[in-house]
Image (cartoon, rainbow, N blue to C red; front, side, top):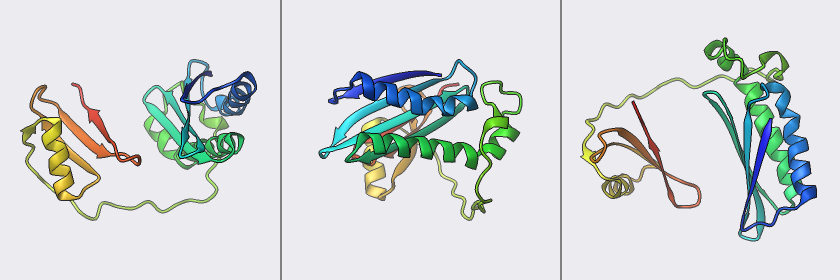
Length: 175
């Protein structure tokens, strides 16, 4: 597994980078060698934050943690990622059975079977062409955390969402 470490307003150092690589290497046994883990370190309100994303050919595992101690945050992120892999192992096997990027035999078994929710409400709505600014306005007026719209410039369906930090994220689709 290749590990990319980026510090945003955060000074990294050799020992820390080695520790991150060592901890993430434990997760490497779940994947083939061509997987990349992206790690972003930053400071948030005087605390250390680590965001880790592992992309495995169509499957993305992501975890983030904020702590006073960066080493504690690293441990928690690795635990979260491992739990995600265990939790979704069965679903991933059904979906990506022929995917050589994931090594299911090494993934931990889930601690207990969770009952998954079911779709209890469906909504049908007409997509109207609009730009990002109008989509943000519509989302805010509705008081929702996300908004689906048709991009007037490109003609693709996009999803706008409110991030934990108060900013917005945008998911763009391509055909």
